[in-house]
Length: 211
Image 1 (cartoon, rainbow, N blue to C red):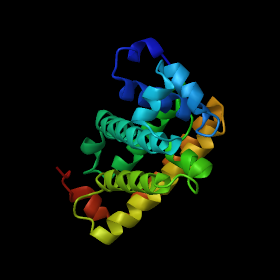
Image 2 (image 1 turned 45 degrees about the horizontal axis):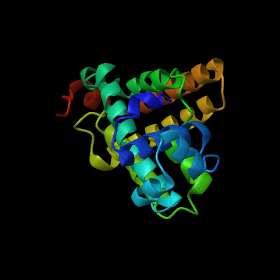
Image 3 (image 1 turned 30 degrees about the vertical axis):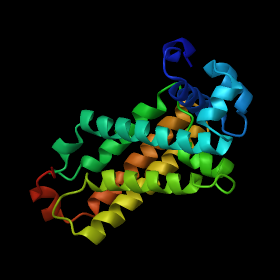
């Protein structure tokens, strides 16, 4: 984490960004408030003025992480050509390409929302709700990769199956090592290909990309 890059930010933002990096890299329970205060360069009085408790900071971290990750996810799908491949029924495979990109990032430590639910989901009010909303929005984005003419119940069922595959790949890649990450991507790609094969041929061939 490059503290110097955030040193001129307002205190609230500086605390949040510092906590984001520490919570994601090392875990919520392993990162104490004193460490966040020291790393962000604020006083305890300033910290508690903005975040009265660690629970408040955890919820702010999850909200912030959600915005960052969803922005990356949508951008990655676009850069990797998802919209251009919808008409051919191959857009789902772009999910595997996006995950491969993320898994190769040295900062990758798995899904912050899965990690947070495991760590504090039952003890921090709202943490599980934020995490569920994050996963719901991820499913919505994945549903947008499917042919427009696919009926809604079927569209959501396929999107949810693909999202489950994405989460499984994330957990497997988090276990460590480049070889395991590649294996996770390969497993995900096979699952996505199988899901794409269940789409009606006429739907995959004739649909137009959604706006």
